[in-house]
Length: 257
Image (cartoon, rainbow, N blue to C red; front, side, top):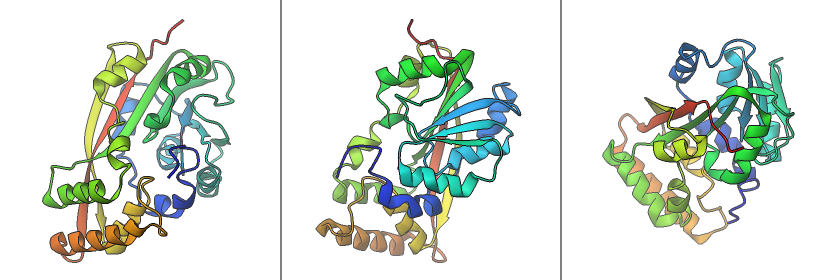
């Protein structure tokens, strides 16, 4: 499987749209409380994918440049969000957004920062961000130790998805966020999030991940058999709960001169 982040989600768009979690409204409430966003705030949502976080920003009245290099994901976002007058779809990437110099009040990246080249991205973010502009990084992180089901799901991924651990370990912590922001003044906001799935939904959630095997690989059916057994073991009323901790790192970056 290619490690190129631009292409690896191309055949997972439908599952991504249907089964990936959204982000809690508390994130927007927090950013409004800190007076970082309001109506007409201009935001570059980098690695915007199918527009899950973009939609929350649009509903808050922000003007959003949704920057996404993957054609299939970007086109899906255009179909879903194209009716918003404050939505602008951009074929670009973190290291080369195509946006104008000092053109945005905020840069956001949700579930995407680990795919960026950090050093090249710093220079591009510095170029497009207005003076005293802000940066927001968001992740839905599965709570592996929260329940036996979540722990079993993690073990299943480790057993049948060779790329899983390498990608999962790329999610950032507070110190790594501070290193990228170039300042200690980074706020770490955390809240709970969850999804409820029947088996078909759980399967779709699994297959939305870029590290899961494709249907023509031998291990694919072994993974699905393991998933079904896990579901049957822990389901209640034909449902399981997928638990997350949503983390948001935000502040005003100090990029190198």
